[in-house]
Length: 280
Image (cartoon, one colour):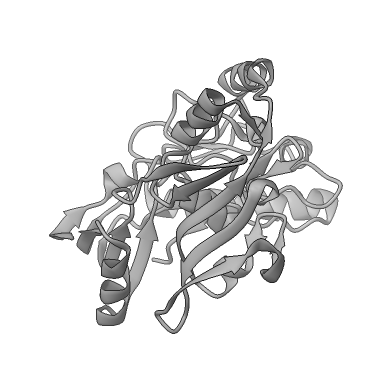
């Protein structure tokens, strides 16, 4: 375990916004996670920061990184053990190497495996839990235990893990044989052309309401391109927010408020955030 006091967190968010944390703790063994959670009052598990908005102030928060928990192990028969800190791109590369199929529709999503499991991340009609057999977590009683997918609640961009604030340590995936390389290349090209990947952003800002697309609702409400300070609703993909230089935490909160208000007035639909917002 490594502990860094009063650590600058700006580079730990893909939006490039963030203040100084009380401490950043790098976990190297899963037992250390239990120790840290028991001994700290206010903690936040930070993955790759690809969907997390961090306040730009001094924070009385112990941020915890599991990026050193990055073991990938082929268990045979299409089953793969994956620790929480594994970069999702690395898991995709591993499935290609082993000719395993199941996650192709998610290829190109940034982030750690643990972060995607936490929120049941997905794309193009597929979700990460489609390929999960079992997860290993630290529960609310600070106990490490394994749970079958069939014994936990999972829905669109939401999980029992999230609701009960469990911490994901690892998962066992179950794949079919036959990696679809063409599908992966096709979807990566789509992301590169349709998403503002050259700008600091947190991915999809809002969940898609049932039967609707947030991007279309934002366009219809007339807020695509809207700016608050250096924060802008992307002209490339309106469900993305872009940092055009020195945007503040408050700029992001305000632009989210405006988009939600305008969409509600135009369509009657209340958008719900997909990004994780650490409260200021």
